[in-house]
Length: 368
Image (cartoon, rainbow, N blue to C red):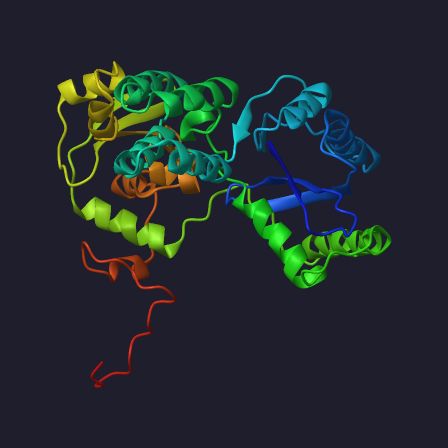
């Protein structure tokens, strides 16, 4: 289980920060645990919030909360407060917040001619699929840009490769890379509850009880559900079926309790053992080589038990974003573990499905 915490302002007239804490499910939907209003954003404030969540669960005789990871901004106070209550755990930095901060620095510190290329390289670096890959790619990134932009690289290395390095995709599987779900909850509170007004603390206190009660009732009435399985949308079914029809050559290997597949990325239809070795041994010697070779082959694992195919994992960007992808679903289709719905077969290979429901069939003898 992950724990997500974020502070928002412009809700209380006195200027106090409002802290919202919760978790996300495998559909990346945010589920709030509670709201706190604190006088500041110091370690003691975050310790109070985390301990209140822990104590609240105990009072309700629910399963004890023991998060494996925290998603937050780069605040040292949040990190210390979390550590005091739950111990030393990985901290994931919201990629959206990190990127905004870095882009601002690039615009103020980097010559205009290099800005776009530098931002693109950081975007690719963020897609690193594991700690080993991130460490090597980071060194190659520094090597590429250190002579061109030494001032920015000194800042980036200190801030984002030493102090706050938990912003790349592969830091933790099945963990969102942004806290967009929580930000959406903040927006709802401002748009539908406070109507963008800053309320006196006494009024906001009454409002928070109403908000939390509304959250609770949405679960009681099944208006909101916690998903412990990913949802395979029609769009994913369609992309998966189209991918299967490409009939790509795949290399497979049996593990103890799973099957490992190596799948060619992009428009490639086959792969060689040498290409797989390059990926496994990270044989790239410049950042530009990393950008090409590290994303030329996808690694997919499916459980031996075909009924658990949705527990499969892939290291493509699509999987990191949605916890399911066309490679996992496509391989399950190829192995006859599942069948795509008929609507997934209505789109020609290479075309994208339009938004909305598929059109219904017309009546007989009518021209569509």
